[in-house]
Length: 67
Image 1 (cartoon, one colour):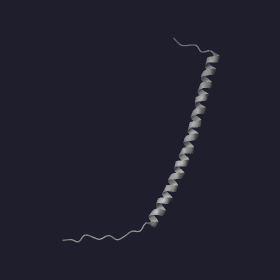
Image 2 (cartoon, rainbow, N blue to C red):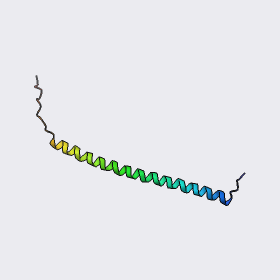
Image 3 (cartoon, rainbow, N blue to C red):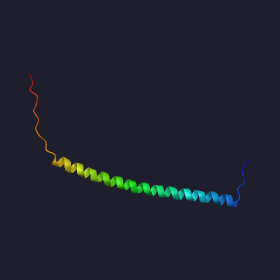
């Protein structure tokens, strides 16, 4: 019950696979760009948080007296 493929059938299958591989490559490239953007944003956020913590003023608090 095996199907016999012609050369044209095999070429069509190979070209379809090539199209799929190219589409996957495009998606991976987009994901890499998005990942780089996220890493840059995270680095900027870390720096801004660090600057905010340096500017933050700590006020003394009253301690509860022991009865």
